[in-house]
Amino acid sequence: MASISISGITKAFGQFPVLNGIDLAIEDGEFVVLVGPSGCGKSTLLRVIAGLETATAGEIRIADRRVNELAPKDRDIAMVFQSYALYPHMSVAENMSYSLRLRKTAKDKITAMVKSAAAKLELDPLLERRPKALSGGQRQRVAMGRAVVRQPKAFLFDEPLSNLDARLREQMRAEIKRLHRELRATSIYVTHDQIEAMTLADRIVAMHGGVVQQVGTPLDLYDRPANLFVAGFIGSPGMNFLDGTYTEAGAAAAVVLKDGTAVPVKPRGGLADGTRVTLGIRPEHVATGTSGMVEAGVDLIEPTGFGVIMHLSVHGLPLKVFTLDRSVMTDATTVRLTFPEAHLHIFDAAGNRAD
Image (tube, rainbow, N blue to C red):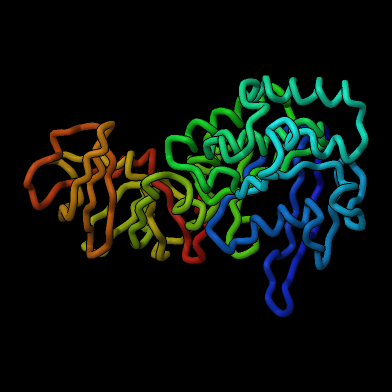
């Protein structure tokens, strides 16, 4: 396996920039997830690493070897795509061994490598089947097995679970995590699904507009989002935002909302008194009760089985609450809310985290 270094990578299609100065260091054996909305540049970056796209500027190094000028086949990486791209006329074993046969690998070695990969992915009973006789999840495991047998320096995954239903995605997430734990292979995984990112990654790279917004562990991005984009993208349901004004008097500080409600917050040394800010709090951290400081209108209540999602409105802005307390499922038209100080986030006028 190998480390991957990405330095100053830019990519433009004609006059349209897609990647803007990407710098990223991926350690040997690390599982890194590139996450962001459609069009943020994450798949383009993966294709640049693979050699399927040429960078406009910058450098890619795999195992400390510059690979910009190398063809994809010479970079010693394996890629798993959203579409399974299996040969329909070949059996599972033939699909998995195809790249090895092209390299004229010895037959006994091919057999051993295919059996080893099949055992890891629980494909042993399916080796003689053709793709049309497989389910979507089985086909995706074959595509992964085809990558595993190559024993590459790195694995690249381009939204491999997007074509699967919710239950299969959950199953395949577990399969991928288990496989990575066994192989300890350097892996870069692209997804727009923040649940996949949170559950799979050693580190997450949040991207937006061709720019890296934040890099950190899943809990880093959840607990301390660097800006409004990361705060809103990571977490389900997403973080709530309310506009207000930061005020500070001695050791006390608050954010004053539009209706004059002062929400106590920890003092932020970098903010001046009177600064316009955005107050953020996650739905699962909002408390409900008759003593709450903020009144909200109830628009909709969604029971999920595990908990309840309340769709509320505060000052004309939507706000969500996630609670395990089923007693909120009433016909009440208003509810009072408390925002615990320990769970509040403040973002400045530029949308950056204020500490």
